[in-house]
Image (cartoon, helix red, strand yellow):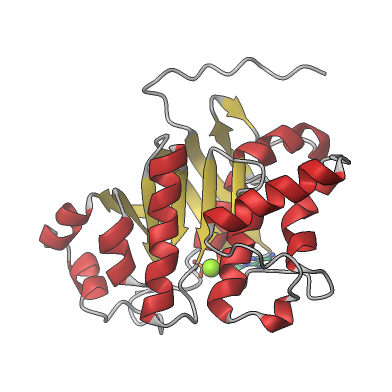
Length: 263
Ligand SMILES: Nc1ncnc2c1ncn2[C@@H]1O[C@H](COP(=O)(O)OP(=O)(O)O)[C@@H](O)[C@H]1O
Ligand SMILES: [Mg+2]
């Protein structure tokens, strides 16, 4: 079946989320999220733990369907698509999961090639060439035959990124790419994120708690609270904000233990 023709124009957002609600039993996690992601920007998604950031991003890549509301990718509503209809969407928007989510029993090459093979690519030479290119981009040339257990935490994240970009998506969502990394390795990830934006005009959506990274990479920041977008703006607007929730967050009393989360 044919999909609606995208209505994107240069100014239309690549991703448009409207009125998104998601429940898990009694847990009303997303409470009417409205958000636009512009093509080619690096957007950092901040907020308290358990606030629904990962759940929101899963809706943006079609891994979850909302109870109500819409997610449009380049003008096409994906929120009620079947798995088959979602296949081309998944090529547009990739995801790098929180823990990297590599298959331990597969080599680096096998992990990176996985989306291509799922997609029906059979030409061994093409697969090899594209794995090689992806590894070059994340600056891990020649690591094809290693197993995930041979890799450091930072290298695993870069392999996960190589897998996320193997099909040259327009957008990559990163779920806590800095978690568990030392500052130098976290810097390497930041440089890769900006390099992808620069070299491929890739749109980046980065969930992170690392403010140091946020102020280095973000073009725009979105702060979520209580299942909604609470604040959005540029890094300098965030630094200048006098909103007590934002200033508390920047000062590190961000309620990770939920102290103001339910007040
Ligand atoms: N698949 C799921 N089933 C049930 N509850 C879930 C599921 N995924 C997330 N949740 C719940 O949704 C809330 C938001 O989770 P999440 O999006 O992971 O938060 P975070 O902002 O830390 O990424 C949490 O209360 C979490 O327990
Ligand atoms: Mg999360």
